[in-house]
Amino acid sequence: MTTDHIAGHLRPGGHQPGGVRDSADVKVEQHRLPRTYAAFAALRDATGEETAAVVQVLALYGHAVDNGDTELLAQVFIAPPALDPATSPSHHTVNTEVKRVPGGLAAWSRLVTIAGDGSVASADVVDALTETLAGWRVTSRTVHPRHGGPTVVADGEAPWA
Image (cartoon, rainbow, N blue to C red; front, side, top):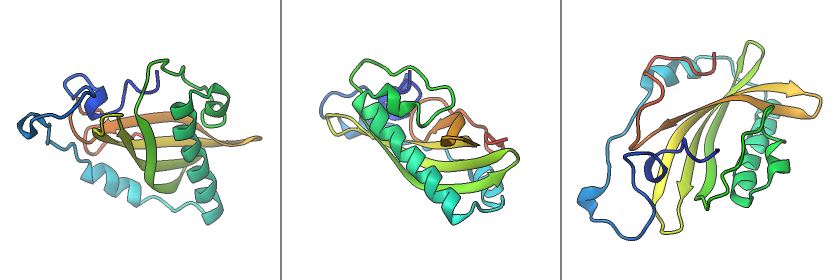
């Protein structure tokens, strides 16, 4: 399932979509990764061409998930995950930074999801990518919730390694 790992309203302990909530019920803790990000930022930058290609691939993820398009999802991942047949929030990949790593590229993005009731969740997403004959594809994805839900990455870990 591609949406079970998103933060906030889709995580156990987060909020389920469904109308207005009392602000006292909103989870406000933020899982930050300053040491992990500093290590990522220190990696060598990808070329502009590589960055543009990766941003395009990651943009396809949102379109594939939001439209239930398994063929499009195959243009994102080496081994595409199964799509969740349930209604899911819209997916937006933003603030992508692309770096060179042994064997390919790594991308750090922010994933923002918006449910039908307007509730929002966000996560840090670190993708490892490899170049194939068909273009860049995600080989592994680590999704770390920003608000609510359990932490996935301990600060200082390198999920792109």
